[in-house]
Amino acid sequence: MRHLHETHRARTAHRPPRPHRVRRALGLRTALPAALAAVAAVALTALPPPAAAAADRAPRLGECAAGQLCLWERTDFRGPRHTRELADTDIESCVPLPGGTGAASLANRTGRPVTAYQSAECAETGEFDTYPSGSWAPQAGHRVRAIKIWES
Image 1 (cartoon, helix red, strand yellow):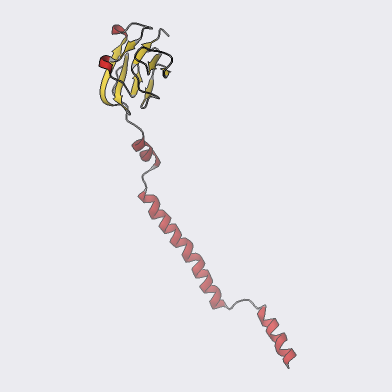
Image 2: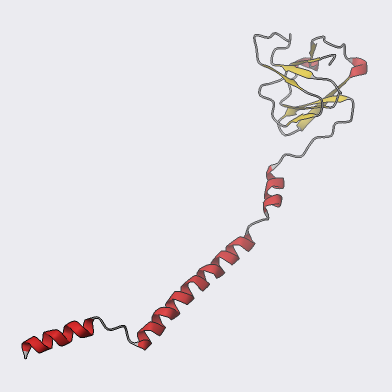
């Protein structure tokens, strides 16, 4: 008899689960993804749209009229603004910023390239960068103490 009992147990071990167990498993399988989808939907609605988030991070452009070079003392076009125009600036001459001030951001709307120098004497031993016309730099790579407007 013992041999028959082991054979019966071996046959029943390969039977599929009962229907009520299958229903319970399916209920859990469909309820969990639905709950996760609901949590994800709530989380996504709480986030700002990507364009709005990018707009919040992007610095606002400072006011700078056509034909001007505008320099701000602080980054992101903040702080006191200094302007230069072609009419009051010698082309290809070193022009120190007034009163020994410096600039941390700039906008070039002169129609010509402008080089911004770290040195107040436009010495090329310090840092300097040239900005083409139409450039808006919310953060210059160095403190700007002098500029040079080029012919073209």
